Picture 1 (cartoon, rainbow, N blue to C red):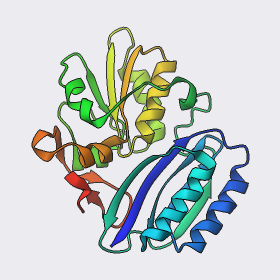
Picture 2 (tube, rainbow, N blue to C red):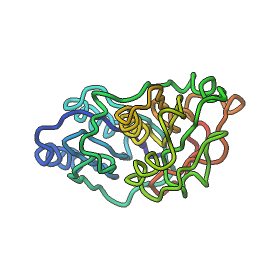
Picture 3 (cartoon, helix red, strand yellow):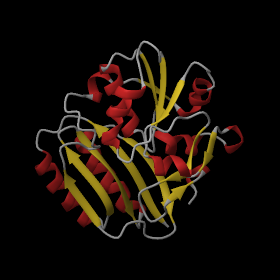
Length: 235
């Protein structure tokens, strides 16, 4: 059984290339597979290890640089990635909005246990910040599909379809929390006052909320060989 970790952290990284080199060495040392993205705004990725000790070591080494991580653990019956890639990019999740800083002005986090109550409010506009092909596999009740094929299209959707004077209360979600966290920062900067996002994303919700209490329908697409996960993060 493979151990799989989906992780991210928005945090200033003074030397992304140097940190990426360190991460490559540690991943090679522990026979880790998957993808890590390093940028000035932080780290993002999903990695897998065949042994728990290997996963414990890599997470310890990542935390040495970032401290607290947004982390979701799951399992895979077979190797979920073919190799290890460590990339240096301008953003850890591409939105092409360099003025946005989620460490300073993100929206309000909502824990998985409180999400059902929030989206039950008829005044809340529920937005799925993922791409349309992900939306089609599964989503929350009453959620809106922005019709995007890439996250960089989300700002254009906001500009054309949403108005802070009309849409007073926004709740957003994504796979692991990173896209909706950055999207919430963008919307706060655009003048939306009540902006909420699901902490830990769909994965945390499926992990913590019992299926008989769930407002989720379908499967959650993941970018590895497992393809999608269900409640309890089952393959």
